Amino acid sequence: MMKTWISRSILFLAMLILVACQSSQPVREESSSIQGAVESPADVYTALGVEYMNRGLYEVALEKLQKALTVDQYSTNAHNVIAVLYDRLGDQVLAGKHYERAVALSPANSSAQNNYARYLCGLKKFDLADQHFNKALKNPLYKSPLLALTNAGTCAWKAGNLDKAESYFRTALQRNKHFPATLLQMAKLKYEQENYLSVRAYLQRFRDVNKHTAASLWLGIQAEDKLGDQSGVASYTLQLRQLFPDSHEMGLYEKSKFNRSVQR
Image (cartoon, rainbow, N blue to C red; front, side, top):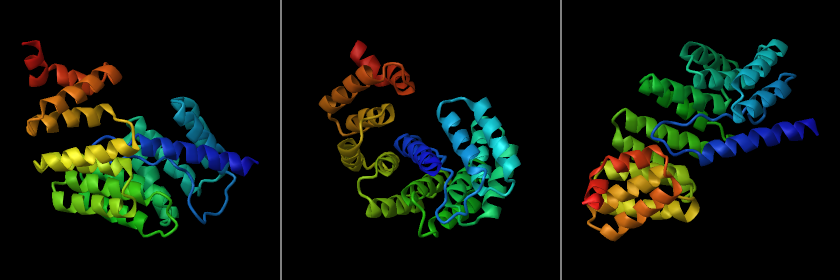
């Protein structure tokens, strides 16, 4: 019963992270399970830490994760999750320390490899980040390879390598053509490449499998404007106003030429 609860709490949070993948930064994976890992007495405290993180109760989460490491200082899962928490709290030094420990204890911990690679990408250590993304992908039992592929593509894009980024995104979509995070990232990449018809196509595919986000609607406004389709601009604008009136993207819209033209 306890093992089932731990697995469910971890799976639920992992699903939330996948759905939330909308930014142009690689996404943390807060799953604390690895396939084939030896069970540890720290697992219960680690799962509790994940649950409290999910609720935004970071102080309590930190207490549980520190307890997990007291119980078992060699728990790769506990090191991975506490690193994510320190990362969220803005403590890069401690985050890096625990990410390094997690991957050193278990190179097969693909969740930790993905998270460490994302962390390295944030530090602009792009080549090293790419190595760790690929270490995550080498594990045939990894449950979230699409997330790592999308993160690797996003990191390559951040490094200025658009061809490599597109290659990672295409590999992810070859494995699952409906993966929303990758579809949205590909749409953003196509906008940067000034391929606006492809932006439209990827946004349509994204909408077929996922509700629009503020980011996807704002991208749609800009792409439809480039294509000269003012009805498309109006449709995306209406949805942005109705669904995300207080969003950052709505603020961008209000400061943009689109809002000024409406006001005239």
